[in-house]
Structure formats: C-alpha cells, structure tokens
Image 1 (cartoon, helix red, strand yellow):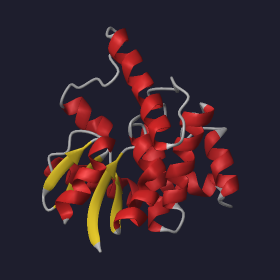
Image 2 (cartoon, rainbow, N blue to C red):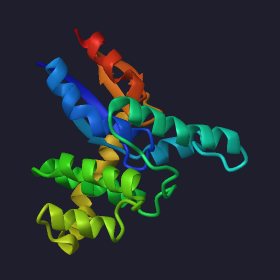
Image 3 (cartoon, rainbow, N blue to C red):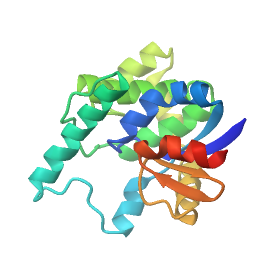
Image 4 (cartoon, rainbow, N blue to C red):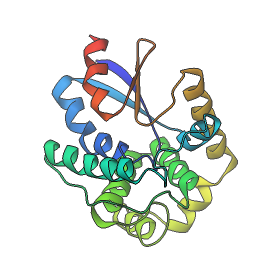
Amino acid sequence: MKNIDFYFSIGSTYTYLSVTRINDVEKQYGVKFNWKPFSVRAIMKEMNNIPFPKDKINKVNYMWRDIERRAEGYGFFAKTPVPYPLSEFDLANQVAILGLDKSWGIDYVRLTYKKWFQEGKEPAIDPSIYEICKELNLDKDEIISEANSERIINKYKSNTDSARLNKIFGSPSFIVNNEIFWGDDRMEDAIKWSN
C-alpha cells in the first residue's frame, strides 16, 4: 500500500474538502495518508501571504463560492462564509496532534470541519469543542490541558519544521516521492504520482 504524507492545518478553508473525502479516496485507490497537522499560519506569515485579503472582496467572495461549488461536486455541502480566521488556530491543531497519537484524531478533525463548514461553529472553542468531545466521549478540560502540553507543542513545531523542510507553503499539501502536491484538487494527482 502506498503511503502519502498529508500536511494540513485546521484553519485552512480548502482543507475542509480534503478531510471530508479523504477516507473514501483511500479506499478507492488503496493508499494510506499519513496525517500531519502543522502551522500553515506560521509559514504564511513568514511569506507575508494573506489568504483572504480584506481589500480584495471579489477574490474573497470567489473563494467562498468556490468551496461551496467544489463541495457540491463531491456530494456534500458547505455553507459559507464561515468564521475566519480562527481565534484558537494553534489549539485546534494541537488537539488534532493529540488525537492522532490516540485513536480519535481523524474523527476529531472531520467533526471539527463539519461543524465549521456546515454549522458555522468555529473550531477549538465552545460550542464546537464541547460538542465534539461529548460525541467522542472525551473530557474537554483534560483534552485541552494535554493538547497544551510541552510534548504536543513540540510535535506541532516539529511537524511545522518538517513542512518547511519539504518546502510546503499551503494547506492541504501532499508529499509523495519527494514531490509536493498543493491543494485539495491535487490529491488524486499525488496518488497517480505514487504509482
């Protein structure tokens, strides 16, 4: 089975499309994605890149509508605009790292994006984090405390350093055979390259 590294940040809007369909894509193509949450925000700041510039309203409106169209094309939906940028960006991703170390990480990421893009609930704050922890039978306070531990923060930094080393500049990104494929619409291209 081919392995593909999946670098993503909760907080990236187009990543909603990838996390919602990635399990089906794995089954369809017989590949395995290695989920790697990292800070795209840190990397974009270093590049002075603003994804949703306030003075470019036509571009912003296009991007929101594009996400809706693409979701519909995949057979699910998005209700945009959603709360953006995230007030607890790092915490959202640190919880993902914690969960991926355990057994509930992928479920957490998918539920977080579902609540964000289908219910308008911002990740890593209430009511979203409370509802997700309840659904996954987790103690919210314990999860937040552990997600803020030195071990998880160091793993988050390590993933971000790995993204830099791989010359990743956006989320979602896929790495296969030392090649970068950036964007949800490049997921299948990455799979083809792995063959």
